[in-house]
Image (tube, rainbow, N blue to C red; front, side, top):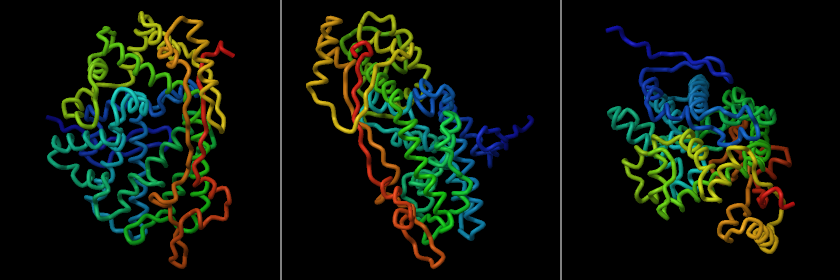
Length: 409
């Protein structure tokens, strides 16, 4: 039998050609758990704001692996000892770091499953795949969990200047057309080095780090926390919450087998078993979109109206300001909606609600970005920079919003 060529080259719109480094990586990419990421949007419902933002977590994971390949090459050139086993573990860990994301990403964590984040699910997937691959992922899992003795390897997977952030900022900037997020990932990687098994940035890379942090802040306000995206995600959370309530009352809803399972069961970290994981692996964006299309014709006013708002992009109005909205203002809008549609207050609160958003580009006491001076002195980026606004970027900024039906104005 002719042997299959597994050393493929993929063409990426951001970086050009990406080479799959070995047969194990190829087999992981071919695995159905990873292929599922083709059907998981990288940016949830952001395409309702930026029409080009249809790229997937599959794109992103491959891009992260490409950046990791470049990083290993740079660090080895600078004399950092990275064994072949560590190199391969880095590729596996970064490739699979987002494998636990559910449909439309973070909306799932607030509706279908309770208090089970995507990192935990990613780890479960990795451990299950590890058994299938006879322990080939063991070191990758150690690095992913931060249990390996060389901390810089974990920092490359999950840190404030990791391959995840370096890819998603550049990729999301490209697909949304928001130029402010277009960072120079190649320059940043070239400036990386390691001191005492900790990741640092050479002094001449200060300006690239400043640009990176500023880009991150701007992308959050302009893209990830864009008010229309915020409304859409809030509506999706409420669609799934309402569907779950109706199913609990014994009402039959049209949905895929996988989605029906999560609507019928309360899933928490305590009962997220391997059987639940298998069902979760069959869940993707298509399940949710198809269900919402069906639910637009549902007899329940709340579920049909919420689903139609997303499917037809006829969203709620949103106002954002620096101070929280008074309960009196919220109640006035709720009372009006109750009166207009002859519904209960509980139902009206699906359409009138408040919330808060926070943006912090840099966390000063969490996996710091450290600058290495020529004198071998190591200083945190906030203290190293002469940019006053970088100090401001390390402080959280919170804003408050209210959503309500458009015709109420």
